[in-house]
Length: 317
Picture (spheres, rainbow, N blue to C red):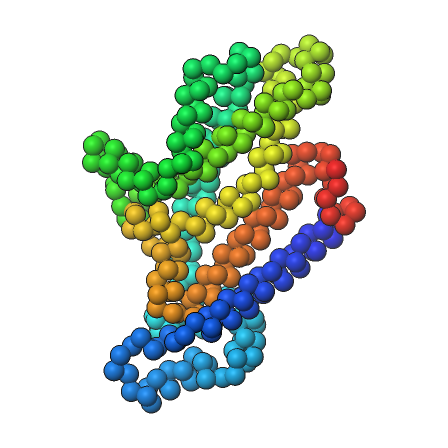
């Protein structure tokens, strides 16, 4: 296991460095620079700014500086907020997006698994889809189809204006996190529900489940102790990318609810061509994705005993 973790950590570090290098190259390919949009800037001042941020150094030197700063997210000061370092900016906006993403992930997981497993169980008991199951499937389809800005608008209308029980925007306390978290979790919850339902239905027809029933176990014990662990294996495969997407992909939701997170700040940095902040947020996003995928790989071994991680150079079943 430790050798496997070391290999995955090394490959993850290589991926992060590669993403940082590619991002650096793409930023330099775009015409203009961080200070070209500032009008009436004397040439001498522009030259001094470029020198201050090392933009007049040869590109290999700049790239080397970026790669050295990757492990500590030390990319210097923001080129837009010149008195603040990239790490200070990330320390301010990162926890907000992380909180929002993790809360949305927890909601999506609970709702998705609950709806999916209950729907599959009722479908298996009846031998056909009942009215309630069909209604849940219709709700899941709607949840997948609706974009987050529509879901957010509906929730704001219902719970902030029609029944004013929750604040419609800003990020000032626990109540302010409910609507944006529900908005961000809607589509992932629907997707998990559909995946867990189909996975549990498939698992309930497996030979080992029939064997468990033949031993005289109650249907509840068969489902909880045998079928659901088998069905979870399929669901876990999508949790890593889903967690990374929720933590890093909340720009629309942050914009709708006025949340000062990484997504909104990233787009502002791109508009301002703030090279250092763009690099910092991109590297942090990549690290989250790499870490989430690693956690999912390790969960395979916990959920499915047939999987042994790292014993023979990777995963085996």
